[in-house]
Each structure stands twice: as structure tokens, then as C-alpha cells.
Length: 165
Image 1 (cartoon, rainbow, N blue to C red):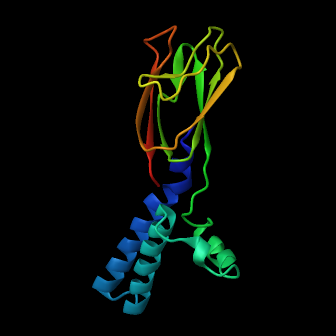
Image 2 (cartoon, rainbow, N blue to C red):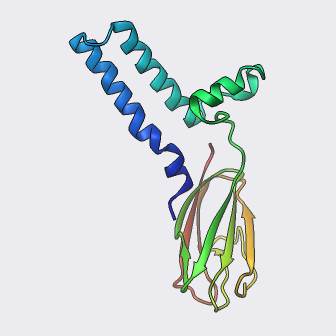
Image 3 (cartoon, rainbow, N blue to C red):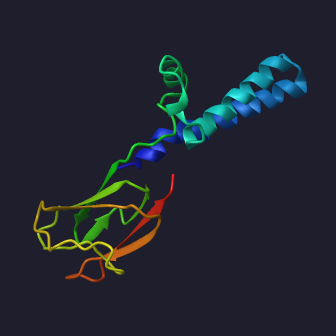
């Protein structure tokens, strides 16, 4: 299963450099008018910063938001908290390493026939033993790196990296 962020922002990794390159080439070989090249480059950079969360959409008048949403494909960078899933399958956490934002929730689901836990080494979070199809959730309010393991199976390890934005 692909990382949702990777799928969501892949177009930025591909399209923005392409637009910048075409704009730059247009400035060098005069096949594209200078003002079009500059406009293409400016729009691509604005789109990149927009998706990175550098612009606050909550200060825009409501009538402007639909236009930006159509142009850039999202509401802006005031991110809403999300729930991320970690499945426990065949005595391992999937995914084993995860990056989330502060305020996001991670939900562990035991898909294994054995009982498992999601237990932080620093005791920030600790699930009870989960039977098959049991779930445990924890919302990360502080940024940092959280290493965790399964108490009955200490060789099972995982990491949650929490960033501010």
C-alpha cells in the first residue's frame, strides 16, 4: 500500500521541476515569451509552497477558496489531523516506520492470530494486549521520534516520527 502523502504530492515532485525547467529553457532560447516563462515559474513555486503548508487559507475570503482549490487541488496548508493505520501481520508492524504530523492519530490493528501490543519504550503510549482484530489508537501531540515494540514479542519494533507541520 502506497503512502498517502507520496501519492498526494507526487505531482509536485514531477510537475513543478518540469514547469521550472520549461520556464528556464524558454528564458534561454526565446522560444517562449519571457513573461510566460516567468509566470510559469512563479505559479509552480507558489503551488509548491501552497502544498507544503506555507500559506494560511483561513485568512482568505470564502469566495476565493474554491478558485484556489480548483487551481491547486486542496484547501491549503492548514492541515487537518489524520488517522494513520499500522497493521500487525505475521509478527511485524506494517508499515514499520511512519511519518505523521503533530495532532495525528495512529491506529494499530492486530490482523495476526497472536496477541500483540504497541508499547513505547518511554511509556508514552502502551496498548493492552490486543487479540485478533482488536485496535488501539494514540494521538501524537508532541513532535519527536517514538520507538515502540510488542511486549510479548520484543523483536517486533516500529517507529513513529512526528513533525510539527
